[in-house]
Structures are given as structure tokens and as C-alpha cells.
Image (cartoon, rainbow, N blue to C red; front, side, top):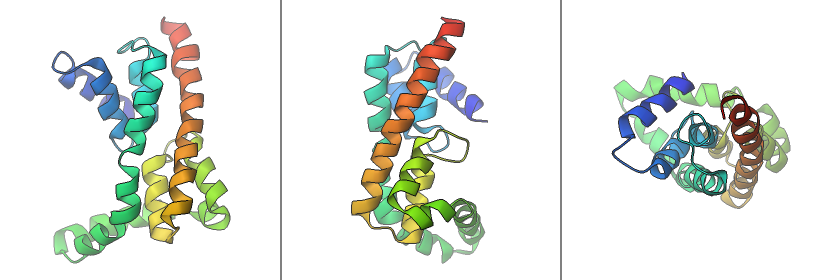
Length: 169
């Protein structure tokens, strides 16, 4: 699914905006985030130079995080007050909280590792949602998420430009 979503952005924005802006937008989108941005940036897709792509993806992935940490619980509370949105919010909360055990137990380090190891269902968006739902303070959550994004950036740069780039380059 994430590959199809990444391709959708590349196809629908290609030729209309710069390749770097496509990478930035992909990096901001839940599910895709930095991982999708770096995959899209690398060969054989957009072929943006890694020295440009890495900071673009990191900034794009981190930009929504303060808003999630500070506002998502209020937004979810409001959404739960509506009949149509309540079940969707409850499903999102349940799914996020099902992944929260290590974050709850280890807080900073659990959050850093959860965000930093690029596996399906992990990342800055989910980490920020879990941190907000657990009530982890911004001063602890944001640095852990930011370091996790940097860690994921290193791993994904090696994958996108080294391994995958070596295969297709």
C-alpha cells in the first residue's frame, strides 16, 4: 500500500512541482513519512541527490510532530463527540495503543527506538500519537522522536541510496 501511495504522489505531482517538493510532501504524509520520502528520492524514482534528500525528508517528517503531540488528544476528543467520527478515532487509538507497551515502559528510549527502526506500523506519526495518548510530556517526546527520525534517516539512506540504489542505479 505504501508503495502505491508513494507512486501516486510521484505520478500526480510530477511535472507540476519540483522533485524536492514531492519528496518533502511524501515525508509529511502518515504511513509514508521519511521512509517513503527517501525511497521516492532515491534511484530509480526521483533521483534527488542524497545530500539534499536527507535533510528535506527529516524536516518534512518532523514538521507535523509538534502539532500531533500538542493537539491530537483535543482533536480526538472533539471527533469522538460526533457520531460519524467516533468509531474511526477509537480504532486509531486502539491500533496505536496496541503498539505502546515498550514506549510506556521505557518512555524516551522506547519512543526513540520505535520511531528509529523503520518497520511497518512504526514512525514519527504513530510514535507522536502514542506519546500524546500516554501523556508523555512534549519536552521528553519531541527529542526522542527527532532522534528516532535521524536514526531512521541513517538506516533508510543506506537502504535507498546504497542497497536499492545499487540494484537499480
